Each structure stands twice: as C-alpha cells, then as structure tokens.
Length: 207
Image 1: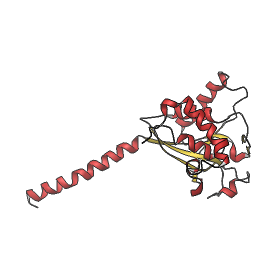
Image 2: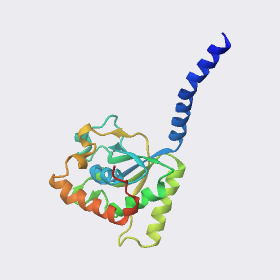
Image 3: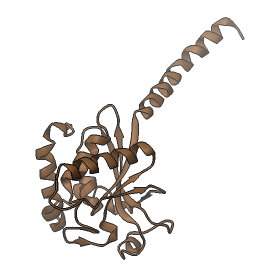
Image 4: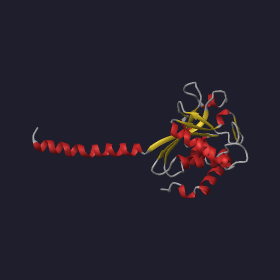
C-alpha cells in the first residue's frame, strides 16, 4: 500500500472513530432508574419535563409472568406495578433530585393506592438495579421519615428490579397526547403544576 493511499484512508476513518468515541462518552453519562408512583401516566408526564431526563417510558415491573399486558396488570393479581423507566444524564441531574421529585408529586403514605387508583399495581415503589440505588432509596426514605415530612408513615417499597417491560404504545406520552381528557385535567395536571412550582428552575427549556 502506497503512502498517499494510507494517509487518505486514515483521514477518512478519523471522523467515524471520533464519532464513536463521542457516543461512548455520552453513553457513560447515562443511567436509568425505575419508579412506581401510581398511574404511570402521571409519573411519566412529570419526569419528561425535568432537565437532564433523556426519556421517561411507561411500563411494568415487579411481577413474575413474562410479557404482561395492561389488561393483566389491571387485575391487581400479577404482582406487577405500573412503573416508569427514567433515563437521565448524570451530568445534569442525579438520583437525589429524581427521588426528591418522586416524593413531592405522589403520596408515599397510601398503601397500594394513589387517589382513586386502587390496587397493588398502583403501589409506591422504587426498583433498584444495584446497591448504590438501593442505598440511595433507603437514605432518602430514612431522612424523610426522621424529619416527619409526612403525617403518616412512608410505605414506599424498595424492590429489586428483575425486568422492565415497556407498556403498550398508546400509554406512552399519554398526557402530552391527551391533555383534554378528564383524567389528565383532574389528576395529572395538578401534579404537573406542583412540580413546575417547586422545581421551576429545573424545567427543560422549551425549544
């Protein structure tokens, strides 16, 4: 191979290599956490507005039977909870902030219930995938309990994440796509307003 051809090949390859390197570095900054705080439409809508959140996906976790459907989970007999898998950029937000929002926008003191939504599928839970997440969850619950942040005891469970199943497509971005629906106006909107008021400096900048 002549010297000129070798130089040209190296020049052509460099941008692709640089691009891969940048993608790898970006991926190192991403992490996920799975939360259950009642109806996943509510939880998803809130976190989609947080600066640093790359995606919020509604789904199911906590059960044993594979490939659960909404109809299955709605029976309250599968062990699954409605959850949201949050993918976030660790350079912009962190577990501490994500947990603080979690305990602000839902009621962690009602067992298997959020408002009129009743059943084990609506339980308050944090699903951890490693010891770091488990310890962080235990720490904030301990701090909130010690500080009497709520009138009643916190019943949020801390559960090992075995597998996350994405919910059906029509559940994704539900609030954004159905803002005029009664449930969105009466249940989700108040949570959104509370989040936007308390964490107004942490909202994503509108494009």
